[in-house]
Length: 337
Image (spheres, rainbow, N blue to C red):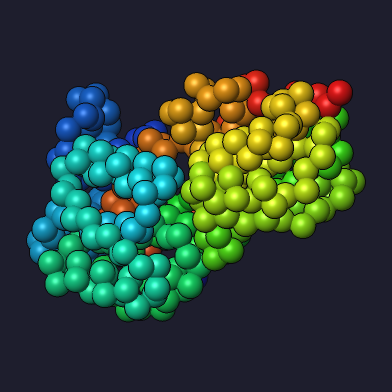
C-alpha cells in the first residue's frame, strides 16, 4: 500500500536547520544582504538547492511590490524606554537596508493610533511596528485587518507570535528579591500608569515576589513615568526607616529620592530605592541608583528579525521568549540598620 500523502514543502526553518544557521541568516542570503560570510552563504545556498526550497509564491509576489520601508508608530512621550526602542529598531532596520517611516501618535487613544497606522498604509509600507504604551491600543490594532504584518512591542502576559518584548515581569521580581535578600520586610511600589503594559508587568512581578517571600503587599502609589510624579508620590508614600521602594522606572526613582531626602531620610541608610531602565544618568546620581537594565539594542534587532520572518514566511512566525533584563546593583540599596 502506497502512502499518497504529499511530501511537505521545505520552509525557511528547514533550510536554517540543514545549514546550521539561524532563519535570519537564510533571509539575508535570500535577499542578497551584506554581512554574511562567504562560507556561510555557500552553506545556505547548498541547503536551499538540496531541499529545493523557494519562498511561497505569495511571499515572492509581495517581494516584487515591496517598498523596503517599514512604518513605525511611536508614542508621543519622551520616556527613555520607548525612545530607546525607536532608535535601536531604526538602526537595525537600516542594517537590513530598510527605511523607517516614523509617525508619532501624540495621543494614546486607539482612534489616534488607528489614524497613524492608516496613514502609513497609504505610504505603502511593507510592515508596521507599533510601540505600545496603552493596552487598549494593542487590542484595537490587533483587531484591524491591515494587509501587512504588524509587530507590536508590548510587555504582556498574553503571548502572540507578532509580539516582542523585554521581560518586565522577571526584571521586577529580581529587583524585589534583591531588596528582600538584603533584609527589607516592607517593600513599597511606585507604579507606572495603570494602562501601560510595562507598568502592569512590573507591578505584577513586584506583587508575586512579595507573596513568594511571604511579605505584606502594601498599597501602591502611581506616577506617570516622570520625575515630577515620582517626587509627588514620594511625598504621599508612607515610608518609614528600614523600608524599601521599588520604582517602576528610573525617572520616577529620581523624583522619589528628592522627596525622601526632604523628609529627612537618607538613602540607603534609612530607605533603599531600586529603579528600572538603567538610564545613562543612573550611575552618576547621589547615591548611584540600583536599577534593572533593559537591552534595547538587542530588542531592536529582535523586532527587525521578526519583521523579516513575517515578510518571508508569514506562516512560520513563532512566539519568542521575552528578552532577559539585568539587575545592576549600586549604592542606593543596602541592608536595613
